Image (cartoon, rainbow, N blue to C red):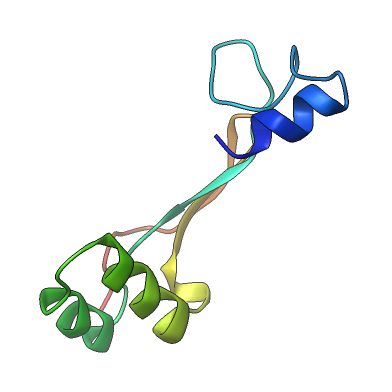
Length: 83
């Protein structure tokens, strides 16, 4: 995890920095293909770099499927891949 280094340097790695049980974590669950165009583009993607590039170029709020704050769901869209 890229955040463990920052947490360690701030001496808070006992509370945050990774997904270990007992630690505080905020994150989002992404829907890689929330739109028809994204689904088409991802079907032609050859690797993770290509998929990330497509998500950066084509992504918007529709790609957020769920948001968790301190490990608890605060938002969840009704369905995956809505259309």
